[in-house]
Image 1: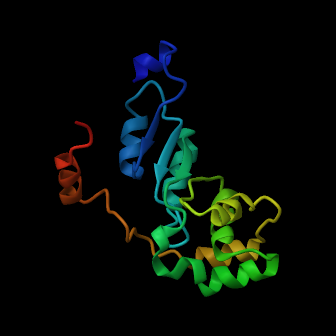
Image 2: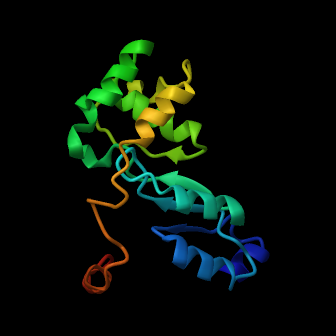
Amino acid sequence: MQKRKTGGKLKAIGVCNFYPNRLADLCETVDVMPAVNQVELHPFFQQENALALMKEYGVHPEAWGPFAEGNHGIFTHPVLTAIGEKYGKTAAQVALRWNVQRGVTVIPKSVHKERMEQNLNIWDFQLSDEDMAEIAKMDLGHSEIVDHSDPGFVKMLHTMKIHD
């Protein structure tokens, strides 16, 4: 991929689910840094150390699961709901805005037009430092969706057939 990038065939290289140890190993080994690292980032798994390392290497963070796949009642969570009420926003909009204010690109998933529109309507408000601090307290410090550092999970991924 590096040859394709330096040869002009690719605009950028990205990685997905590279935890800090893997990202550091990669970045210390390659000539072309990944432009982006898609990782699980939401109020319950904030990965501050991963964000700091990405910043150090100039790798942009992108949240593939900004709504924690609906876990922990994120759409009705009292902290997010209370913050949202101050701005006339939903808990989901607060969760998206929180990640964006941290410099994270978000990939919210929805098939409903109304929710897609809500997901786009996060640019007319800014969370206060106090709001950000309250959301920081929600961090559980680990994923409850997928643990990519679990060798058993990684082995299972390698048994999956993706293409015919």
